[in-house]
Length: 98
Image 1 (tube, rainbow, N blue to C red):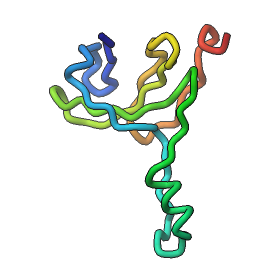
Image 2: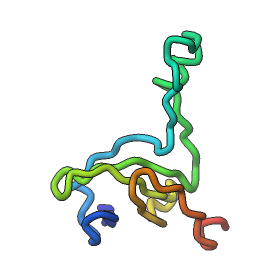
Image 3: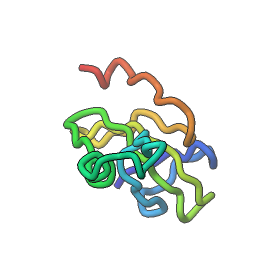
């Protein structure tokens, strides 16, 4: 089980208190009506699925109810950082780059 640090509550809580929200930092097209069907399909359905360090969106449903982002290594399942929604992604720690 993951222990996820909520940047709003300021504590680590068990994974069952949270809901995964997919890839973080996915930007919606500013004018969806001007986007081609192929580009809209890419936006809605296609996400990166890297082996390694990955930024994800989570929601603390059993706590503060807020969305936030987590940087997690998908190989080790280790959480490297958590930060509030709207903040830029922090640089990955040195041990995660190996």
